[in-house]
Every structure is written in C-alpha cells, then in structure tokens.
Length: 390
Ligand code: SAH
Image 1 (spheres, rainbow, N blue to C red):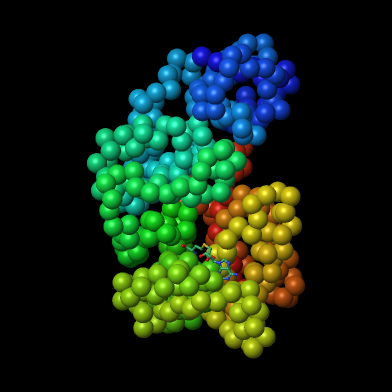
Image 2: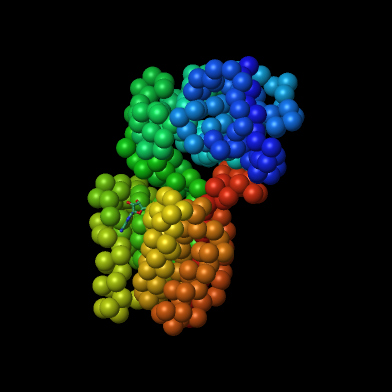
C-alpha cells in the first residue's frame, strides 16, 4: 500500500482527530498513487496516523477512514460502519427518517445518506468515497432491504474532485415522490427534484420547539421550502399561517403539504422574495405574533463571509420589525461559516438597529442524527434560535 508522510510540523488538527490532510501538509508520497487509492499516512518520523483515500486532484489530498492499522478498507468495512451508524440512530430514537450517515461526523468522509422510511438518498461528494458506492449500496440492501435507493450527486462540490454531477436510481426505479411522517404530520418529499436530498431532516427536532408559542397566533414564515415549519404551526393551533418562498415549485409542494395535513384553510403559501416583501410589509406596519425565518447559507466561502453577515442581519432586522411587542422570532442559520457566537451577535445588532429588546427563549443546533464532532467546525452548522421581541 502506498504511504504518505506528513511534514515534521503537521498541524495538531490531524493528530487530534481531524480526518482531512491538505496538500501542503504532506512531505512525500512513496509509490505511484491514483485518485481514489487507499493510502497509509505516517508522521515524518514514521508513526502510523491512519488509512484513508487520496485524490491528487483535490486540495484535501487525503481523508482518513480509520486510525486503526489492522483495519482493512473493503466491503466489510463499509458494511460495519453503516451498521454502526444505524445502531447510533436507533439508540437516539431516529428510526423512521434520519440522516443515517453524516460524513466526517460518522468517520465516513463526504458520504451522506438520508433515510426516508424505506427509501434512501445517497451523496458521495469525493472521488475516494464515490468509488465505494457499490459496497455502500450493497450494505444498505443487506441491512435495510429498502424499497428504493437514489443518488443525488447533482452537487457542484463534486467538480473539485474531478467528478461529474449526476443523479439517478441505485435500485430498481420507483416513484420518487414519497410521503414521510414527522412529529405525527405528513410531508411529500421529492427525492428526485427537491433541494439537496429532498428534505431538511436537520430541523426535525427544532420544528417541535415552536409548539407552544404558535397557539392562537398569526404566523408568518419565510424561506419555507415545502412548508414544514408552517404546517407544524398550523397543526399546533396557530390562527393563521402564511409561508413565503422564492421557488414556485417549493410553494406548490408546500400548498400540497397543507392539504395533506388538512390545514389548507388556515395555512397558505405564496411565491415571493422574502427580502422585498418583509421590507414592504414592515413599512406598511403589518404585525404578526410569530415570524419564522430559515434562509439559505448566503455564502459558501470564508472569503465572502461578510455577505452572509449582512444577509442574516438584514433579514432578521426585517423579521423583527414585523413581530408584535411580546411576540416571537424563530430564526435559523445553516452555514458553519457563521458560528453560534457570531450568529447571536448578528441578532443583537439587528435588535439594536430596530430598537427592540429581545429575550432568548431557545438556542439549539441540528438534530442528533447529525452529530457534532467537537473541534471539527464544519460538523456544527445549524443555529436555531427563538427570541421574544419586546
Ligand atoms: N424551512 C425549510 C428549509 C428552507 S431552505 C424546511 O424546514 O424545510 C431555504 C429556502 O429559502 C429554499 O426553499 C429557497 O428556495 C428559499 N429562498 C432562497 N432565497 C429566498 C428569498 N430571497 N426569498 C424567499 N425564499 C428564498
């Protein structure tokens, strides 16, 4: 097996458990490596660090799969890892729908598997994991006997690895519009054409957190996608719910989801740019008991972090203006580039600008089927905050 030797001064990050090894951290490579090969990694003085997959085309040269010298990376390895992932989710009670594999946080770098009851959606976002797709599919078939497996590799990040964007069946074809049940409610999930893997499982616990504050409330939700938070609000006893999304397709799905749950009389969705509409309604003096925001990441790179800060501040400021005194703002941020501390600072700045006093009610992260590895900051990405706006 080819060997990779790290520079003398490697960052403690790798030794302390981070699975990524960057190009500039490597001193030399023994042997001819091909993209996707499994390599052994050693320190400069030949101490074993781990085994992982290599891609000379990528800035992240090696991603470690194991720190155990005796462990072979083969079909059985993937079966055992996925079985372990499933045991963990079962232990936590995430059985029906869950993120079964959350990449680095499950020691399977760049592999995402979402389980929607009997259906599975896979993303293999690096060459070294993409190669193992047949073994991964085999393991899923053996452990779950699923009704269907679908690949959503239509993700631009794959191009950094020299991989094409693609999507399609990894099982016999099936109807890709399925219905899942969450917190006792029903939602259509469009596995083939929905965003990311079709549904945002990471907010499944957070959706329950609005249960009491929405009772009897007039609720406005922006960035609703298929209406999950809003339909929860309607079913938890809101008086009226309006959801907005810029995607007509998402709004269409959201209205269908409202129907599916029998709440379309009081819960409706419209296509709108939330930035424009919230500003306009603020000027008009509209007021809601609860405003909910769940915007996209605004930036994907550290270089343009200011763009994200400006975006979050702007939308939260506009949202706060629409909250009746004593009402609530429910607000999220889904990029790891804005850490929890910074997110709270942004909210404070927005409150200051609109001269409203705020009280923190709830501050939490993604659901436990997306575990956070301490010190691996890209695994801690979701911020979910409820504040009372005085
Ligand atoms: N709350 C959703 C997830 C939201 S994802 C859930 O729990 O499932 C973010 C959504 O914001 C996407 O559906 C996207 O279409 C929408 N979006 C992006 N920019 C927008 C804008 N300017 N105005 C309204 N919606 C926008």
